[in-house]
Length: 141
Image 1 (cartoon, helix red, strand yellow):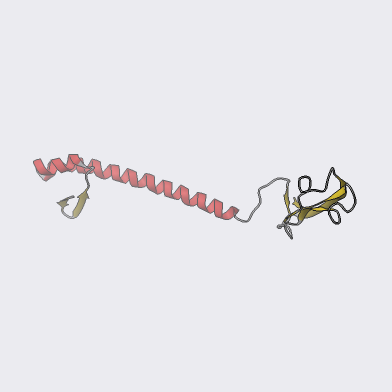
Image 2 (image 1 turned 90 degrees about the vertical axis):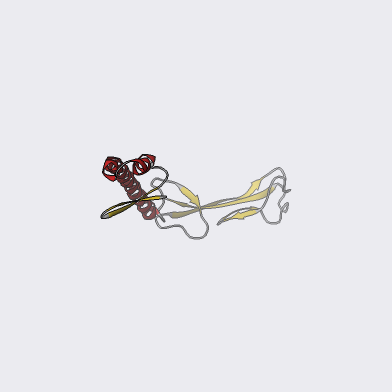
């Protein structure tokens, strides 16, 4: 790295400023000033662009932070798991003693998911083919 001392300024040049470096090596300092001015202008422009990009990123970050904890607009339901989020109303329903071909795990697999569930009606096979129960709880807005 070369250092060019222009009183009252000290300017550091990296490898990307070959024109001014060669200028410093070959000619007097006053003749290097236009190249230095061009370099500084390009750096100022780059700094301004980066500053604008940073400002845009900060604004987008604030928008995301403001939307945290909020649900998108519209009408829809989500499966419930206990209570519902603010602005939603819990809706629950069931179908019991569904007539199914068989009570075996191929046809009915008991499972709980949140406040909803699929189960056998009574003990699996206890009521013939009337074996399935379906309970669904949703939060709607």
